[in-house]
Amino acid sequence: MKKLNFSLLFLSTFLISKSHAVDLKKIKLNFGSHTEFYNASQINTSGDKNRFDLIPTIGAGISHDLPSNFKFLPEINWALPINQGSSQIIKNVFMLRADFGYTPIDWLNLRAGSSLMIQNQHGRGGKTQIENGNTVSTFYYPDENHSSFNNTFDLGVEFIKEKWSARIQTYTYSLFKEERREMSYTLFVSYLWER
Image (cartoon, rainbow, N blue to C red; front, side, top):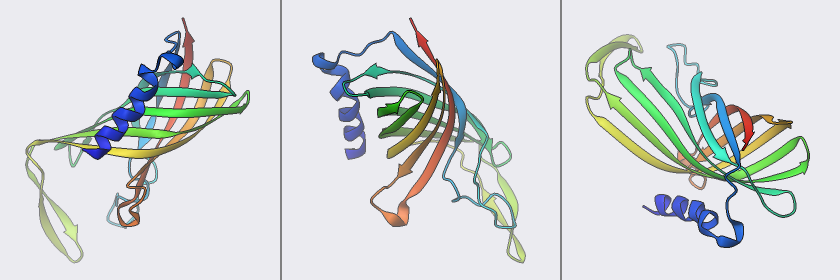
């Protein structure tokens, strides 16, 4: 519950404040690919770990100018549903994000913030046989719907060219617990739509 409260407080602080009314005329549209838990999940029987996942991701946010080259950059992104385990598990990831950006030069934006990551998994049940050392073991797929909520610490670097930008955004889970710490990242191309 503390994670949820922290994210809601972080997002609402600026959205409600009258002194920093949000300008809805600058909307960013995000397109990219999400990699979940970099170098943490085994992807084959040779022991290789995942370093890049091609999970299409879309989203939108606003860019609100603050004094001294700072910006407030809330956004929502969705890593589109993917199938895992021979299509027996369908997974969605939703990101409610809030970054502060700093633009030291016109083409560079440094970002730091936090996200509420909502992961939903829908299991269709069933089982599979997988090599387990010198033997074969039976593993069972879940047959229920499950959601989890995580608060992350985020860092990003964005390169800007007129109304377009390219960004790498990282999300660190369990920042202060080394034994549980994981990192995911998204590669984004964004378009700034000014109404």
